[in-house]
Image (tube, rainbow, N blue to C red):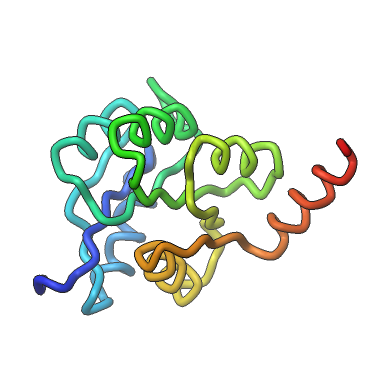
Length: 145
């Protein structure tokens, strides 16, 4: 790991997901997983201890779900860059995560290049939403107006 690496905290309750994402991230010279957590409570603790550049956060986890963990981390550090990493494309979950302070939403089915670019974009201060999620959010918002 070089000094210029983007430091990542990976939060998911499934060890196989954490292992696969870590393997994919570690293949990039500018990215490094510096910590992992298996639930929302452990994520909040690890964030406070490690202060990563980017947190990849699952939504469905035991003890404390991802949306609540995002809220707690953002209360601790309003500048925290959190990308949701989930299997759910549902607009309600995306909206909840974004309202809680997530800067992006990534589906676990995303190809490696999309995930890597979303991490880099978040590090640059940019948002990332898959087109399908953005469309669902736009439709939901127009229906409520």
